Length: 152
Image (tube, rainbow, N blue to C red):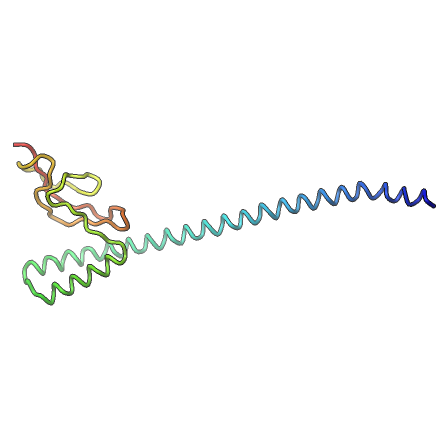
C-alpha cells in the first residue's frame, strides 16, 4: 500500500503546480482589472471636469455680451442703480473664474489682445481699449480689442 500513496502524491504534484499557475494568472488578471478600473474612473472624472469647464466657459462667454451692453448703457445713463447691478453681475462672473485683462497702457500682448488699429504713439503700447478682454481660470476667453501705438 505505501506504493499507492507515493503514486498518488506524485500524480498530485503536477496538478498542484497547474493550479498554482492558474491562481497566479487569475491574480494577474485581477490586478490588471483593478488598474483598468482605476484608470477608467480617472478618465471619467477628467471628462466630467472637462465638460463642466466647457459648460461654464460657454455660459460665461455668452454673458460677456450682456455685460458689454450693461457697460454701454452705464456710459450713457450714469445711473447708480445700474452701476450696482453691473458690480453684482461682475462679482458673480468672478466667482466662476472670470478676470478682466488689464490692457490699458500695457505692452501689446498678442496672446491676450487683438490689435484693431495702429496709431502714432508709444511703440507697442496699448493706446486705447475698445472692448474689454477676459481670462477664465487663467485661459484667454476673449482677447481685449485694442489700439496700439507705433513710433512716430
